Image 1: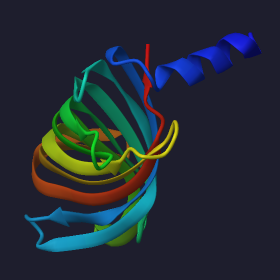
Image 2: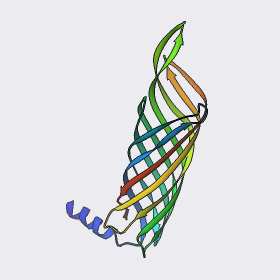
Image 3: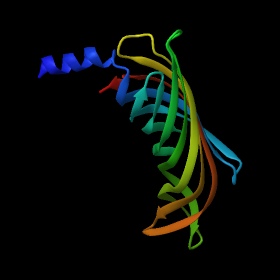
Image 4: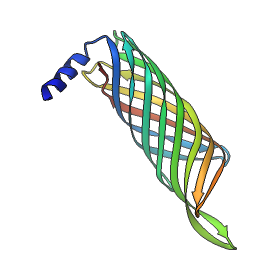
Length: 193
């Protein structure tokens, strides 16, 4: 089994067309904006996911997925998920890959507490929130000159038009005007099969 894995690793770098598999691990940093409340919070954390698609010569096309867990002030368990399509061009002369992506699905969820008035008393209420409608784009460049590993810089931006809050056993859906803008540095390991 070890021999088969090593054979795949060694030959995947030299093939020129076929199935592309590319796991990704990165560090993301950016901000979440609530345009309704004119508020924004900084966030940072780890991101992981991957791409699956087709590569022919210098061109790639396929699907990608990314999940991120962030640290955000006054919020717990802030995370995002993104799934979409991408296209890429690899310049073999200078070992650079440029790519664009459209996120068909983008979602965030988090937990927090709020001071609300209940029967004339101010109480802290824990709540969970998640977006139900979101989409966005990504643009990036990567250095492809290292064996088996790419180093990537990318920017992602998503917008959200609806979210749902669950608190005190109740659920409420409402409109939103939120934006998530994040930069990421990552390493990826593209394999062609």
